[in-house]
Image 1 (cartoon, rainbow over the protein chains, first blue to last red):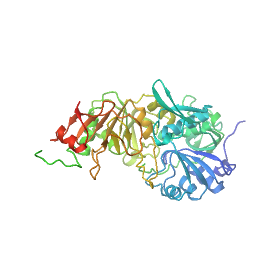
Image 2 (cartoon, rainbow over the protein chains, first blue to last red):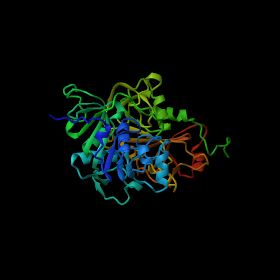
Image 3 (cartoon, chains in turn red, brown):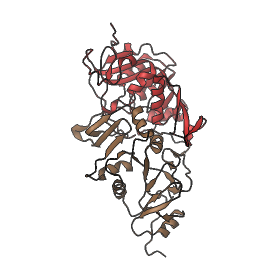
Image 4 (cartoon, one colour):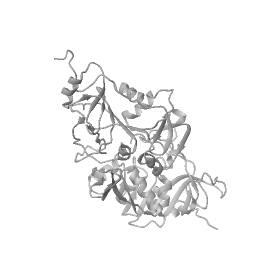
Length: 230
Length: 221
């Protein structure tokens, strides 16, 4: 019998190794897998490369992981926020490498990684600082920039409901990067508000099919506080 | 000499008036993304008799107004990470689909703020380029080149009187030749390959005064 349910968050992240690339879902706090990030902090892996839209809010979750010095590099689109003081300090002191990627390019690089596409040409960013040093090509009179796919060793994502096969559904705008990151990671770990029985999720409504998910861990229905500002 | 002294820092439209003016140009049936800051205000003035669908790049079409009280749901945020509501017929999708909607040319209009817009339609709105500034781009570059029409709403001058409509942007670019229409507190401008044209002037300012204030050669649209 296939059973992807992990006993708890500690078991779910136990094999994250030093130097791993870890994709972390969420747009701000919506969809941020806070309990899995806390477990990763506890687990102790270091020298990580983290892929996330942002670079942590406040002092918890991803910000705490950064603060503990576990992250060598972050690949993201919007690090600077009103409450990103931990990232700001590390970046300014040169302790954290930043690869800044336009948000849609970040999403598409992850999608491409999960779909077996090595790279793609996008019009986004052409002629800007973020395209410097990248291959460009014109198609039908329009200029494009070549961007490479992103893959990861692990993805930590948050979904609303999941089953033992790894099928997932999400809730509202908390979906954001979850389905993409699940597909692009060797080991995708989903924390869910509730594990349901196989067959309980409507097959027409499943957003992430279980083939993309290796572990599911139930957290309970608690929702994070909303954060304001970018 | 002009009778009324024209302030070099502020035109006759308030920020609400500017947002109201942009809203008038958003047609029935349009799919629209409103950027963070002043562009978000445009939502408050969309004519009630037009069905306009708002897109938020974090993964939703059919976004409603800001949420209040019990409506606040931490899983339902806009691109500025403010809790919002959903309209009947709303849909949710992941980020790759959301940005595919832009890049693929499906979104009709996006309204953005700016540090600078060039007369040929270049946009600078993501980074000052200052040495100690932490760069953050978010969806700005995707929006700039993605929507079929890009409107910019901004005050024409900075607080210290620098004109933000320029021949060449001095701030790092967000996109090249992407802006079509510029809505300011002084005037509405068409920008692009044909250079700047004044489509509408507000208050008592004349075209000649505006040329003097901006230092640009302007024509009437």
